[in-house]
Length: 314
Ligand code: BDR
Ligand code: CA
Image: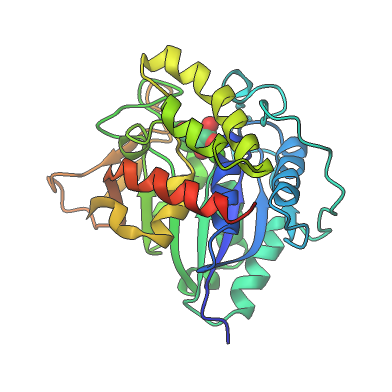
């Protein structure tokens, strides 16, 4: 029996998704059962291709990559080429992948895996819009009781939004899917912008990746240099926020993060605040606590972990 923590990464790479995948593949505590792609930062055809590029960069062409939903449950797809570039992975020059895309649909893979593996042993790690996760829960509600935890990157409260003044990108793209997940009763840990905006890729942190002197280290530095240029200008910071790796880092070193359990609801009606995550941080309602919302991070510890683990992929 494997003693590793079994995870499925649901993702829309994206440079920060790519670093999250590399972190997972460089971490011996984790067993990546599969990577499921979703349309988000760029359309599905690119996200599933990018996921395979990253597995090959990590020297792991054996990882199973599945394509899932190409569009959100209800709304039209919104993408973010302005942040991630035309391919979603602009920065390094990575070869077209030769490892295959799995034939099975991502949603079927998620359902089948959760029904097969021992109940309470598999954690879902959504790094993009929650469409695939919601579709899986709708398809087979029994998986809700079998999922160990959902640790997701999405939302923002004190920090506001990044795609609209009120909403964070992943949740904004598919707020209806987020509603399904928040209402599922599953143990949820949320990494919102309140955390990720404290995990900034400063010049010295990027230099540490480059300093690994490996293909992975160089590609990581090139991805982050491309990725941060937009956010540095937007936020006026030294470096951009490194969102998605927070999810994987939490599984390895939860003490890097702090937050509290509270009620979170998502706006699906108002166009003005569409996709806003309304967090009852102060407990001013009697609504049930449905998520652990993180607010702080030990950023130095987080980047030290990243460099050490990406270093193992050399
Ligand atoms: C999230 O949106 C995407 O652009 C990033 O990959 C991250 O998952 C941050 O809002
Ligand atoms: Ca993402």
